Length: 85
Length: 85
Image 1 (cartoon, rainbow over the protein chains, first blue to last red):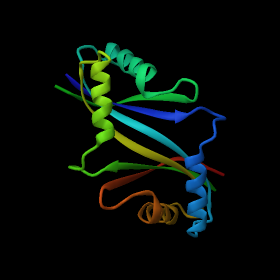
Image 2: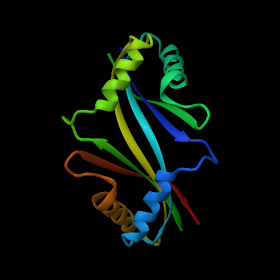
Image 3: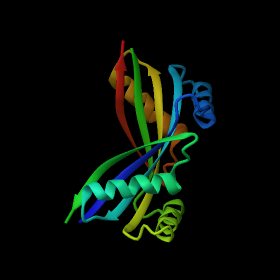
């Protein structure tokens, strides 16, 4: 079957997020004064051919460790968004 | 009350996603041959002071149009992740 898995890469607690901070400032300057904070995250939606769902999740976690996330600064989360076939 | 709203910015259907394509290639080269496609998305988690939830959603949609998304190439989605106070 074909699966779609969302891998969300976010900064670990305590790591500064300059993009988020600058987005907050820009929003405040544009007049959105109720915005108190902005955090940024990145999502990879991975379409993968799967025989066994658990095995596929283990593989996708390995993709995170090998390529998608930097373990020094990032946490990652997986969520299955589609199963087909 | 304080609300946290996730704004997900994704490329419109038909717009090429070079980052996603290159990520797919890299994963294949690393031995993950079951990966058929990768799409990238960006999420801004916005912490905002809210009096009226519907009004706040309208404001956040305006933030997307004014700053966060490029209407030529992006679609955006809002989802409330937290309400507090």
